[in-house]
Length: 108
Image (tube, rainbow, N blue to C red; front, side, top):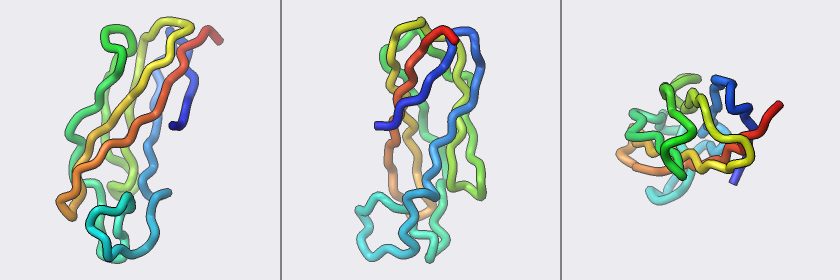
């Protein structure tokens, strides 16, 4: 799982790049790739959650890069803690999936 760092006072954006998972075509509807050969993109962000809750804040989320990326804005957090940030999304091919990354909150 990818890990990123964040100062507790920083308000920063973090990108989940699903274009990096593109294999160009898909015959398996259960694969983990966007099928760009058939113009599959992210159609919506269902939710962005943080675990543990109550310290690191999701300020907003949005689609970017022709709907192949999810950008999540985060603020706050407690120095020394590691948070799991999970984005659930649907695609134009009616797939639903999650991507999770970790944020290590530390003074910079």
